[in-house]
Length: 169
Image (tube, rainbow, N blue to C red):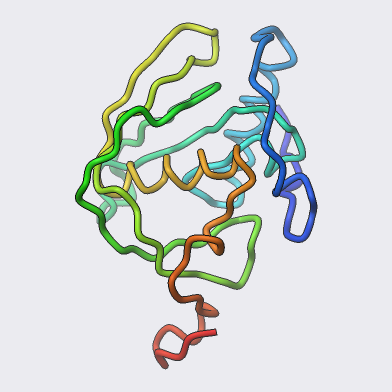
């Protein structure tokens, strides 16, 4: 396992639609392990293939069931070829940032609940119903696979140190 460089804007790979994962062999397993290590090292809550310069439809997500407790257990998800098959009509605004877009955060409207289908790291079908913060993370990471960044969806953008002052970028 190794850390990989997180690609930043304006690198064109971040704007391309990623290719479907077809081979779940040793190279793919190493990619997944490297992505998990890189996500944790950054630290982030999710990472998509294009963010580590790999144009494959794979995401990793790590979610803590209790954000107020840093020792709370986390669950790590790996989805290859993920698709959102259902979105709730109810949406919610929330702040997002991105490892590939440093020094900007934004208010983004996302579905409150989603259903995601895809393949696990071994190529077996899986399905997830997510709501709240977990649903937001999955929508953000799946957007990366289509070349869409949170800044494209944000209603307002801020530099992190301006949040307290309330001035938009």
